[in-house]
Length: 502
Ligand SMILES: Cc1cc2nc3c(=O)[nH]c(=O)nc-3n(C[C@H](O)[C@H](O)[C@H](O)COP(=O)(O)OP(=O)(O)OC[C@H]3O[C@@H](n4cnc5c(N)ncnc54)[C@H](O)[C@@H]3O)c2cc1C
Image: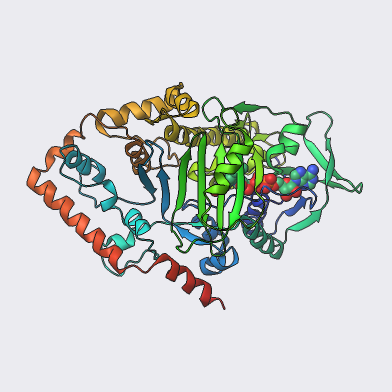
């Protein structure tokens, strides 16, 4: 049997998704394919998307990007986790820190030993055993080091806060240097092949047609190819995630440079604060069924840490996913494939994971249905588990102070999430299926932070007697605390990286 390789790849859209895809394909396909990217200066990119998760470091690594240069070019800061304020009850806060908690001790995970002591009133907050969370509280940061054997300093796990516009520009430079050809122009028509309906070319306003074998739709919410042309359909999740709008505005930097994202619950949604080197990014995500645009804007503007640097921008969206992210010869990556609000900063990661899956299931010109189905199956699983995690933050709450919180607290939730909550309520266990994105300890932190309490600890945490348990937890807490003491401040660390490039 002969195999026909495809030749021409056309990426539609030059936002974060388009340029991440262009950069990755230009590197990984080694100039064996022609890659073109079409974007319109008339249609602006979404321009937000500033908080990431640690997987972005793998993306940088695959691209061979120098991290210090990346931090300088995107005005990035470092991120150790996300702080949630007022989510379970007004006045309460907790953090979802990346990385490990405590130390390994054989039979069960650290969390279960802690839980046993905590349920007996003999252990402080979980935070005291996490290098990420303690360092975040102290506004400290350094990259992990193996200099001291078995030290929590080797467990630091981080991501970045970055300027989305600068990031797209940085990746564009990279992709063009690796052979991607950019065409500026507004696509006004899409031609399909007779017979199978595959996209044959996109037609620009000036009449030029750009033909391709594989099209990657990175055109944002409009889904120019995947939806407007192929009418793939969308599964709407707004009954679980009613927030459908956001106001976004940058403001002057506050004096402290926090190494974490702040997510503060509001009467009908929540507000983000993300400190970059040159400004703070802010946004108020809310449900338009429960709050007017004017009220939402007013809440955001009166809670800024510094002077606004622009007029606030209104963004509209619907939570959900495309019925098929890959349909015929079109693969939707980025906002065209679906959207989950940025509560756990997962959209840029989902772009990365879409690219990764495309590479592993890369088609030839035959576009085998088995490959396409597998791509869609894996993507559906991944985004549905992330969706559940985000719903958890809303649903597991004691808040009953507004119609919005009453709605999310009492709504029906997906069965998959119900099972996770029930398992945790039983003995604090979380079962991570098929490499789903968030780790056991990620779920455990949020479940605990949102006030869900296990009835009992893991029975095998009782393998240690009380004295052994107290000794183990006490030593761990002291060691983590000492490690944080020696870390530099986040502000100093960022300044040193920025200065090194001058
Ligand atoms: C309120 C909000 C906050 C967010 N915060 C985060 C966050 O903290 N972390 C995170 O990971 N993600 C976040 N995201 C998501 C993140 O912004 C997006 O995943 C990311 O920017 C990718 O967008 P995109 O490239 O798919 O689309 P866009 O940025 O919309 O780009 C679309 C591109 O398509 C082009 N285009 C469209 N139509 C045409 C046409 N007819 N002809 C030619 N070109 C065309 C446009 O010119 C543009 O270049 C957030 C999103 C929202 C809405």
